[in-house]
Length: 328
Ligand SMILES: [Ca+2]
Ligand SMILES: [Ca+2]
Image (cartoon, rainbow, N blue to C red; front, side):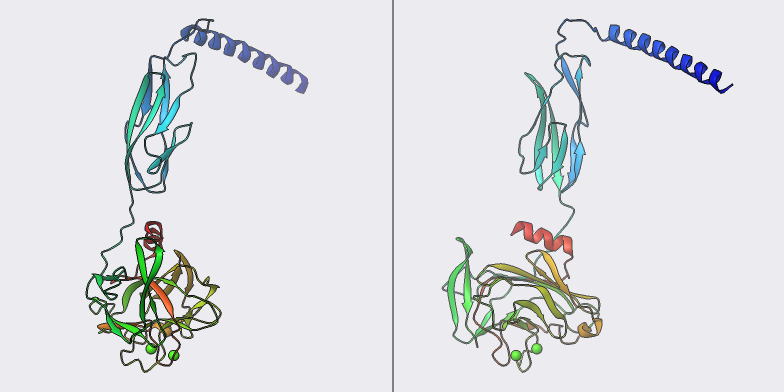
């Protein structure tokens, strides 16, 4: 019984094959399956235009017309591969904000597919910013009020790039800064803020101070580089990764007191305080109207080089901080 069934199935399969061959033959007739060269007359594309978020990919379908054109090879070109790239299979990747065209072509035949790349990540406007580019006016503000210089130890120096100068701040000297943020975050002080600092620590083995919320400068500063090169302070803990000496780096502190206190170095999250009791609203890390930059009560503020300080009144998230890093 079993044997008969097997034979029957085998016959069925052979008959299916014969049927398939007939269909294939018929199809070949439609597509002129002979030795003649079939020239491409047009290219059908879909979609005809593209809007894509930064970092995403999509595929453009392109089909030669007639479908049996002898040479099916198509050429894919991006008019600006800094905005969008395209592979030889028509896969498009959005790499920067802006507009350009993707072109698919064969000889003189071509189709143009406009593409617009948008970045859904929005960085809110800065509240204050200092760039230290004017040697004759070190504390000059790019946004907001000029810095107040406390002490004499300020020297204009070369910064990270030829058009981006910096200041060397000697131990014992510091700035007072009106950051321009009004009280927020559910308290009477500034409890939500982001502070960006482009800095260079000449060497490790010393304490460097970033900021001090106590305007009388009678207590320890709030955030340091410790002698081992980690960033933080006892209350929030220190980063595992360390600062590279004599190299320009970017620290971004995102503070949403009561919720998070995060340190980013060169766009990467390097530490966040695990203890919410250390970052209570209106407490140690909350800002008054002014903040002391690069000062400390008792000398934990070794000479440091600074190329930019910028404040926002929001606690920026990881995507926003990564965008800042891309724009750097
Ligand atoms: Ca101190
Ligand atoms: Ca303090």
